Length: 271
Image (cartoon, rainbow, N blue to C red; front, side, top):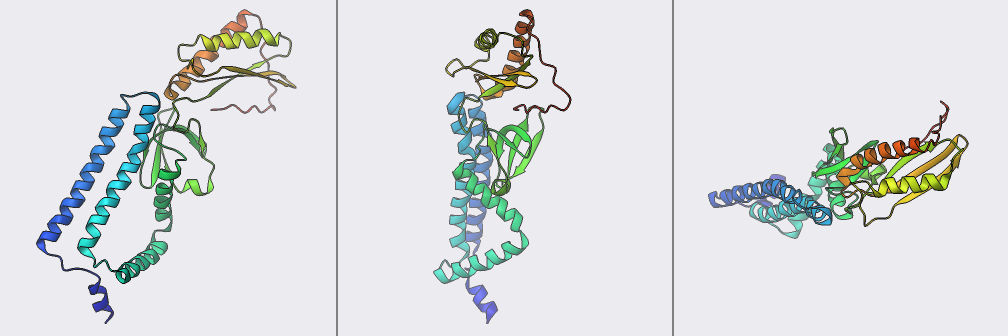
């Protein structure tokens, strides 16, 4: 009796239906494959907000294609009555809950990530101490490339119980913070002006964004933070290196003493 009920959920598969299912699945896979290559290629030929918006379409496009394919195939295989759908979804939910809890949780988190957008392709994020650019958002993981060129795959499951730091959140500007540690005996106004001019003359500077030099007095000396934006987020490390090197050279030319931090002094430096 139970076997008859189970068989009653499914339609009789004819040759035409099987061919249609194969064509739909193959077409969906092909369209997804093309979108994963064409959209990033187009995005890499754009700059700023246009590039980030196009990259953000990639995971959404993939999910929409799979949902459309599923909506096409399911009625071909299953008698889509309300009773049948409730039975199938209930059985599938129980099986998935026991067998693939973590995997499905990552898939669901991936769907949530597409709409809540804690990260998107082109964003620079930090998760579990790993900082890099989001290059691909898969169904289960997000792929980031670090400054060292390492590829890190982070399960979407992390968004449930981990802090995710997003440095630019879909915007073409990314704030960089460059630290300078000086001994207390110097003219702070002169140092502020020198560091401001160093940032202003950098070839990587985003001129439309403000420059700020923040000063904080510490027991060991004076801490300066130069805050500015590079033209493109991918230039952030070149920008930091340029400003650090030229800033140090200019300060040495002024005979400004650098601080000698004691070994037990912990200084937090932004990535």
